[in-house]
Image (cartoon, rainbow, N blue to C red; front, top):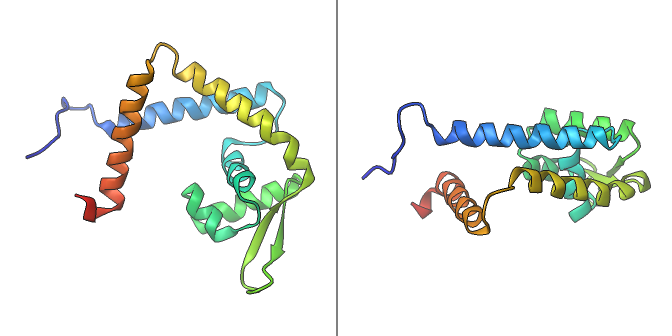
Length: 151
């Protein structure tokens, strides 16, 4: 039996995309207003490096859902800004590890604070229970589409 209980034109992916775009635009605006010269795409790379430094370009691409060309361009620009550097792997010279530079470290708390501020703006007047429901549903949608054995 189908679970497609939406009216014509109310595709969940469209609604989700609109919300995602609105949050991304607000976060970028908050970065700009704070005088930060990084994009949210660059921030997503830094975010993963703050969680675990010295990731390979391929791993960063996987974690940020970006293709090889996009992740290369993002890392190139972060390198130009002096925020990351590439270092050849000790075990496999074909692999470049991406390492945080000292200049990236002060950005961590500032950007986390701005991300939290942005989410607070986005989630005002929405209850914790409603947020949990949405998180659970979206996780299950993702799981259904990425792990067909769960269906």
